Length: 187
Image 1 (cartoon, one colour):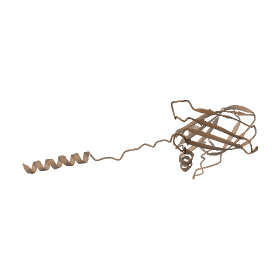
Image 2 (tube, rainbow, N blue to C red):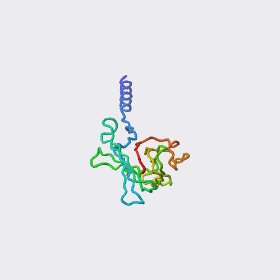
Image 3 (cartoon, rainbow, N blue to C red):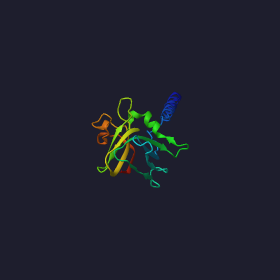
Image 4 (tube, rainbow, N blue to C red):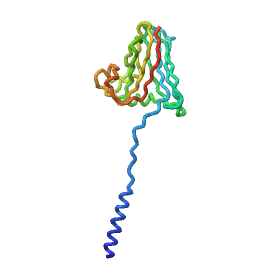
């Protein structure tokens, strides 16, 4: 009987120890907080012409509405464009652009306009596979017009889907990290 009690005690002890085994926690892929997006356009035709589009939402999603500032571009002009993403809730501000560049295969910016805004945007940077990223661009304006420019950053888009390498977001898939719409005038 003592052997049976000892065996039963060992079995119960083993069961308790194995059921208390601590599993490694599963940490979901947390997106970075993007509080600020700036799109700086420097005229290649007029060196003094710099236009900065900005989105600032320092308290993050919810809370106070963001500040969104569009701009006025010159007609029939070439601009060099540079995007920057920041998390200004950190001090000093964290430059999220560096992470997007480091993970270029998993990111792509898309630039969409309303039909009344006459422009073309060309990607000036790429990931290691030669697919577009969009941190660096060239924007060419046409005739005087006005409308809206929407800038979208997609995480894990299908960069090999039809039209995505040309900036067509409709087949890109993935998740939107940030999307901002700016009012634009071309004069």
